[in-house]
Length: 246
Image (cartoon, rainbow, N blue to C red; front, top):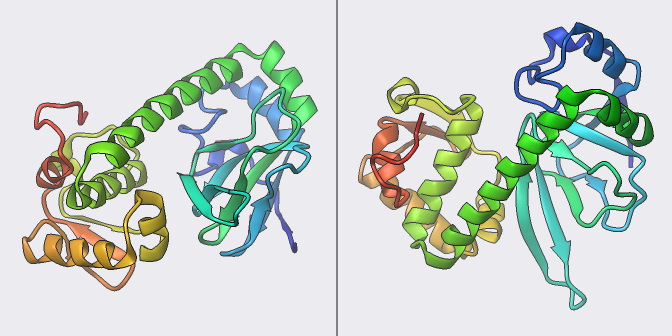
């Protein structure tokens, strides 16, 4: 695996500074993090971590998208989640990886050596607090995804995926009117979306075409989608119109 070390930048100018594990850190705490961080980049399709690998680092996704998956004994692979900018990879106290993590696009990681990071968690309450918040958010997202996979229609699944991408891309939570009319790049191919959502590739393509025909979305190339009215997309996802959007 070829890795490219990137020039070390200061945390203050990081594009995920206010969303990542370091978002609550003060200036002194950021200086401590900068002493143990470095950057790695991966090309689309490269494996970042194999299941069972020794976890010598933890990391935040700075740019790009990665997928979390697990391969069963018979060779079948199930995608379990996606990692978008500001998402955290690894867990303090865990020495080996439980899942495969693969770059779905070109990815840049901000990496921290695991043992020094664990020591910082013990002595820096702001890091531990943010890790807890992110873990609870991940638990909520997992529960939402159980509902999506178990009960939602194919159309609702696609719309739910699009609302996730829009909200994460725009730094949600935000008011729906503020993100209507915006365009976003899809982080996954349609084949990868089918795997993630438990659908066939044909179903994914058909539902995109129907959402486009109904004016819910417009397509700007194969991987770029415009959302004319986010509130309508939210409703198409099977969400209550008064549910939390802000």
